[in-house]
Length: 194
Image (cartoon, rainbow, N blue to C red):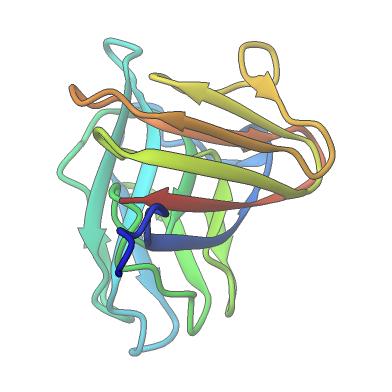
């Protein structure tokens, strides 16, 4: 006699993410577009950046496809502040670590906002859109804060205890799950279940 499988299968695992305090980024766009480029022709994957619209103050994100050493410009031309970036799409897929050094800069003045170096996946705030999925977030190291539906800060985010696992189902309507650390870097793993 065969018994049905009583355990859900893992759909995919988002690798460990490094999160930092976004306030450390310099040369914020302040009403400009953002350009992203690498010093390696091999950096051609997806990249998602998070920040605010300068005029409205609304939190937003944009995913672009990198083209190696050729700069890619965001369609958003009115970024206020950039909170973070990671190499993948908003659905937690197409994750690929940097091959070279990837630079995020103001489009008009070419002033660097932040860089990801070889082997990095993310920096600053990261967010995902896991509509209707059961997820588990595991704090691996550092001080990690989570917010469902909005941009996490150390003031408004749920603080993880050392080694804590936090599981919940995301709304089917969709809302961003964001993670950030305090002034020390933190790492986390996200498991998405069927």
